[in-house]
Image (cartoon, rainbow, N blue to C red; front, side, top):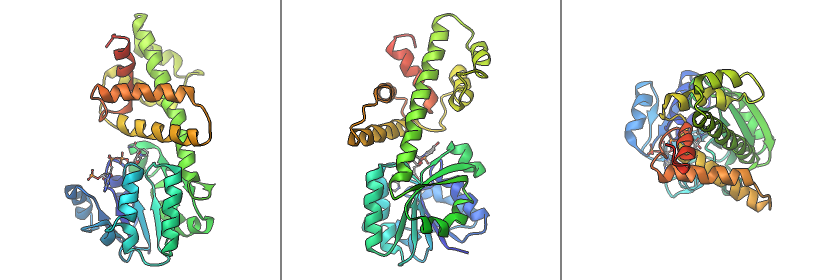
Length: 292
Ligand code: NAP
């Protein structure tokens, strides 16, 4: 079986790496904060001292870190994955980053004879644990074909979007839809509270109708219960919306609603709720109206 290197064992990366290990792939992991490698080591993975070492000898290297600059660091840095990869290896970045940065990294990899796929995901921590992620892939179609069996271990829906960068573009479209939906659910519940409604009853009344959505089903109950534990952190959602707005600007496409959602997320961060789950955005909506 292919030797796999895996870099970035956060909320998403840790369960994804475990699924790869449990599928029988030889796995070497690296995480900047070393203690996060312990559960993987206990499960039988090898651990590396650097991204470069995690990639050495690997047929496939998966990166799951935070933002564009982080992927540039872990792939292109002096001790990065590309420095350890042999010709013909495939690097798959599954983080959510800028489409143009993904394309630039692909070019740098190509110059060293290494293939690069941008393959961001949706489905959250639950999808990562249950291996039910939806994966949007940009890059060479033959390269995707060569790693399809590895991706199938972490996700159950793999969609080929086109050239490098198009996987990230698809993910940013997804995040625009999610961000506006989170704001919509937050405003709907805030309005219900302001009108003196029982918001649990309100949720039951509307969830089966045209207002129904994944966000309503999964985040509204947490908003009502005032459960702010992450899931998907406000800071990461804000980052994704910022990336979407930057990409839209490159296309000269105004996104009014997305811009408004971004500002509300900035309020949540300014209030100190950046590390809470995205359901905490309702607190920002209420704080703006001085109704917290
Ligand atoms: P997370 O829990 O914050 O984990 C981030 C991981 O990246 C950590 O292992 C962190 O290492 C590592 N990292 C960040 N910057 C680094 C750098 N410069 N060098 C080395 N390692 C670095 O984030 P997550 O929730 O797993 O999300 C990971 C990616 O998936 C993000 O792009 C996010 O937008 C995307 N995503 C997340 C979800 C979700 O529901 N959480 C869903 C879909 C997509 P340390 O441990 O040392 O900090």
